[in-house]
Length: 389
Ligand code: PMP
Ligand code: GLN
Image 1 (cartoon, rainbow, N blue to C red):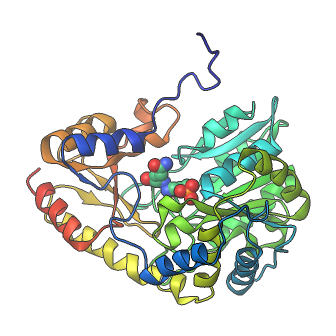
Image 2 (cartoon, rainbow, N blue to C red):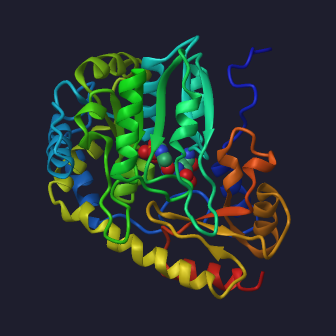
């Protein structure tokens, strides 16, 4: 039976492919981004309590109100913007579903959507499923003087046409760890005012940011908040990537359209997790301690890589860091990642997988992504193997 594919060029994601290969070769999996340690027992207890108390039927379509309330308070405290929990906050099945629903809600045939490459894997398929056209704008690749990827706003401006409807940004940035500054927000404000664009800001790593720097959410600027879907996820913040509880904050008119899609994609998402996260998130130390927690792991892996021929790049945020392997091999990134798994038993993600033209020379900078959301024992074992490469 022939189906006319809506996504003809899409296969299994790089995360699925590399995790499968890691299992097959018994490699240490520093590829797909997930912690190899358990979440707080207190949070687990709260889920059991919620189930025992009978929170096992459909919650409200937009999510458990206690959770929407606590998210509203948290954003007000951190970013000084108040979203109305009734009309502006929607709980979703992870950030992934929030992204898909937002894109489906606001773009269609004839529209162009700008993404900054390298970009997270679900943006372009969402744009294509909506019938719109993805336009990739490359970020500035690292150089000896500027060793972290950065946005070249003049390239973004040059990519805007009459058809541009939406710009998708993601900071702290997967896969590069880059963060943005107030100066970047100034640029964004000027752009959206001049061209009337909508924004989707994927801020799932908002609490994983290092060296004393504070995350600058798009919601901190009224002019940006007024046009943005701001998306986050408890998966990263509470070490529960498998629970798939995320959320989307947007002005009422945008949320109304988002919810029309959301209610027919999933209607609502699991109740006990939402009740537990509402109770847990009331304690702000549960997210305010994350920078220190992950910075120690970043520093540990960076120091460990000094005993190897990989050159770690700085990682200002996320639980990923990039490393340059040009002293070791001339292979393209995807080939190198496969070779490293098969020959040395350490799995990583090629950065080129985050580009539309993943095989093009412009997408291959001899960089691989390590996930350091791992126990020290796991990092030690990986470093020991990497030192032999
Ligand atoms: N956006 C980015 C940048 C991510 O890295 C991830 C997952 N790692 C997601 C979205 C998806 O989040 P979730 O698992 O909550 O769907
Ligand atoms: N976001 C995770 C990563 O970047 C992967 C999530 C997934 O497998 N879809 O590694």
